[in-house]
Length: 334
Image (cartoon, rainbow, N blue to C red; front, side):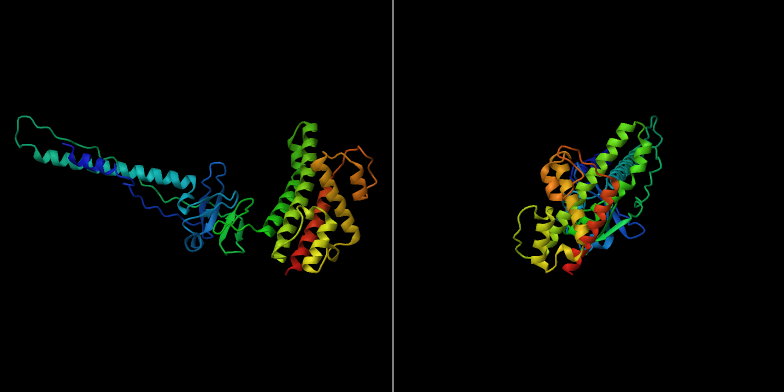
């Protein structure tokens, strides 16, 4: 009685027995939605449609945020996967319905005419669900072109790796890091107004400011290290040399012919040196002043044992000096 239905069901025993064509729509700027398959990341980003086709390799794609790698077929978004599941189920229901209708038709044709008892089968022909194509999400504001392979992609927030080649751009990371610090500082009034408890608000603001100072100097250190490696094929430098302004300046001069003094005045370098020493106190002594800090920074406003006070204006001044010095180092190597 149910021969056609059984044949149809048997087809589904084969792997990939249902094929549902799925066209990934590009957004208004020509970028397609992707999502990191790592459960701990799930970072959403976009890749220019033609670059995904022509530049990105089938064997390996890189997450712009965490660097996770997987084959190109693994980067569908959660919404795209859910749409495909729903489309497959809709097609499955349609095939089952058609098989049952065929079985009913075959059964009814075999029934004798004018019989005393006649049994007919009827299948309720419910309207099949029509799935509209999955629309792309809105274009993302930050658009990036990889300086190594040219792949174009876009993100919200930060990106560290090219999805096509995995290239990590030190210059872009430096700019992103400083931009995030500036944005965090600009949020201080909102934080103070949002937190009803004054102690909590001030502690939160203090930590944000102190972290901003540390992050700014760390960003410069990583940036200077990466640029230095570009200038010399086999760099010979001790670890963390660019945490020390004097050593870093001398090393940079040996590689490029210019020192930090070509980009900042002595007064500005002295102030930046103080910020570098303050970062060391925050990172290693919880901000408690020691004699080494006083000797190396020349900051006589503190006594040994006092707690360092870092203000928002200090971090903004540090950012300004680091940005100017970073721009100078870029120009030194063309």
